[in-house]
Length: 133
Image 1: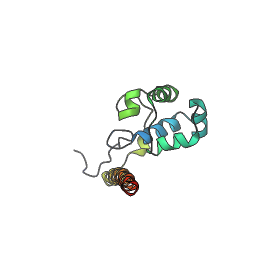
Image 2: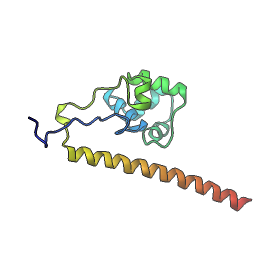
Image 3: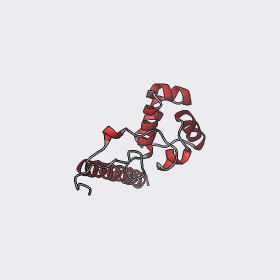
Image 4: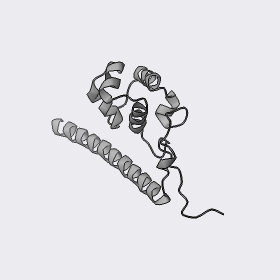
């Protein structure tokens, strides 16, 4: 018989829980690298890597391949969270259903905010074009 309050393991890097940037940061940390170190090894600026980790931009295909190799994760995992990725936090990171729900809601809010920011950028561009035309 199972207890209704039994803890469940949170899928830290799954497609519903993590963004592309979250997976880069998680894999980088699992590999024991700092942002400056990974940026140097990729031949990019730290600001570029921060943009990727903050989901403000995405790397080109050649950098994706380098990332997956340097971080020892599969390309599908990096893009979608499915496939070979780093070890997830251990059993001491088991979360209650309440905490899992909060984390998922936070992820949803973050995604909504990013969509709103993209929409705002689009409208700003449209306004500038209208003012110039």
